[in-house]
Image (tube, rainbow, N blue to C red; front, side, top):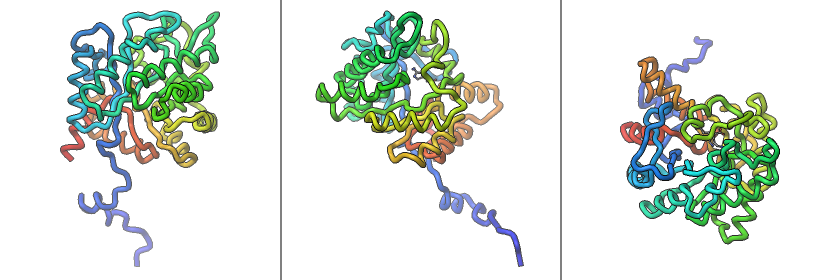
Length: 324
Ligand code: PBG
């Protein structure tokens, strides 16, 4: 008589493993982040992110068609404006790069889900996510600019606006301004739990948005805190967020899992730039298997409780998932 369990019995064949698998990754889980650059023709590769590009509007149109052909549900847009000023005015200009890209995407593929990153850091010379007065990032004065930015994206046709600035009260400010202007159906995906992370390094090169002074620790969260993350999430839900995001993904699986058990709304996780670059770099050296590593990461995001994943690997994931 055995007094131990034979767990291996259920691992004996691929079909058995398939049958009892608890978590799956599908093409339905992905949103591709895309960088659109004003006054650029063609596309330019981002040095620290091989395979990721800055797109001019012409190439962007082509990309949108490819995304739709690959059956990826949607994109999230990041803009690189030609001009930066203290008021971050290109962030909410009706003919700004993001606004133009939204219209272009909707013209090419009307059914593609278009999300936009709503933030000021790419649009002001200080490279901070809020408005600056006397060397400080001031909360309440930032709200109006951020809400204005979200409204301009909705007017251009965005389906979902995703504030990533981490100012307090921005979800409420955005929701009220959208509603006042008849955009009741525009959804808010809040970067509710965004940590002050070293994993954004390559993005700051990609988005030309490194802060010119200080850091983002007075608004983004301390990586050491998880109870605080639950409070951030609660506030954003109360203010009207439809979906919540945890960012970055990999080092914060516990946060995603905890949020999953305490809320009922859809949760996204952002597989950020350095999480991409690290895998790419190691794979280029032949030290890891890119596809296997990335699929394992995706599985862990889903297992932790994420409903969908923002990832620079989305185009590759589409190819891999088709082959499976
Ligand atoms: C801007 C923003 C950042 C990212 C998304 N939106 C950078 C930051 O806060 O410094 C990071 C994305 C990535 O690293 O892939 N507020």
